[in-house]
Amino acid sequence: MWGRLLTCGGLITRLYECKTKRRVRVPWLLLLSVVAVAQTPPPDSNSFMLKGGTVHTISGAVIENGSVLVRNGKIVGVGKNLAAPKDFKVIDISGEHVYPGMIDSASMIGLEKASEELPSDAEEIGLINPQLRAATAVNPDSDLIPITRANGVTSVVVMPQGDLIAGQMSLIHLDGSSNDAMLVSKTTSVYLKFPAIVTVPLRPHEADDADEDPHTDDTPEPIPYEQAKREYDEKMQTLHSFFDAARVYRRAKQSKSRDFKPDLKYEALLPVLEGATPMFVSAVREREIREAIAFADEQKIKIILADAYEAYKVLPLIKSHNIPVVLGPTFTYPLDRDEEYDRNYTIAADLYKAGIKFAIGTFSAMSSRNLPFQAAAAVPYGLPEDAAYRAVSLNPAEIFGLGKKLGSIDEGKSADLIVTDGDPLDVRTTVKMEFIDGKPVDLETRQKQLYEKYKVK
Image (cartoon, rainbow, N blue to C red; front, side, top):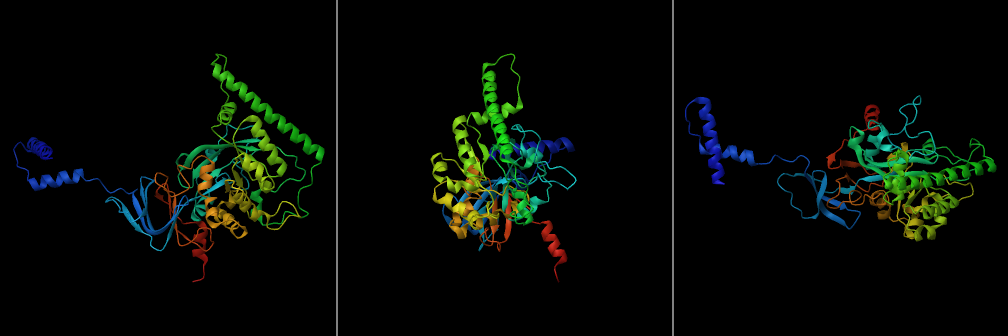
């Protein structure tokens, strides 16, 4: 060390001599202070410690009076009696709770219309569009993002819309000034709306926000069976033909022929054929679920069953194939008039008891903010509270292959954290602080601003 100091001292002396044309002795105390300042690292603004709260890791036990250490957006320590390094900011959260941020497994947030006059960015024309990626069309300035984030949802899987293969689903953080800044995983799955013989069109989940009874005289006119069957057959033929053509394309690519020409549609399906990327298969009724599973077996691909309302009718089949399920929102009406009034609330518990991994998605833009309450509604109907939170945190991360990055409070994972004054699934709970990738986010919303503006004083 002294050798380095003497070298530095000589250098400073020579520099001063060059400027003044005379030799000046540099005081050693001044020299030591200069070197100390040069060698002391500046405080790390991205490093902090949440201290003294109840830590709900979700992957393991709840830690009372615990702490979470975060450095450069990653969790580097979780436990009791942790000591914060010198460059860490300590945030006292005694009496409060820390949870991993929630994940909406199926959302259209950021893809909604900016106004009634403008088209939606969620849907593209054509039946086969696997090359399209939802994240590229997300509007980072959507008014729905802040209010969703303020309810503890830190990430969503955005999904395109279409009649058959709609495109690639992407997982994004609900923070960032651009699409690239928000992106976590550009392709989590490829969305397939599995063909079905539909004589009475199903009400889209986005329409549930209107709070209207779907079983009224305003429901769409039934489609004749012959027409519905013809459309179903045509779509199934198109689907099989596309998969066959994609395999021919793969062989041609592997042959490295000079005549080979890249095709973005086939390229997008190759990871599905190779088992690297699952298909997110929307199948609502029992018949659709059975046919979707048979199609996956035939094509030898991995699938995630989506919006599988009648999954409770085929639990052994789903379990035997080890297929995960993303349920639609619980705040919907039963599909049929003669169904039990609480059917939507009991499906999650049915899957849980059968040992099937499942998550809950809103399949909406407007409803993403209500994700915690969608999960909470299943608790009084047999779903344990810890399983309910897992269905909107760790389970989605694992289902989409991101279990090592998101979904729980564990070392090495992204610091997507919420600090609350109670259970986030309880409507009375307030999110006090929130961090996305270790960065504190603003919890201000337009709704809150309007409340403050017009409240009685």
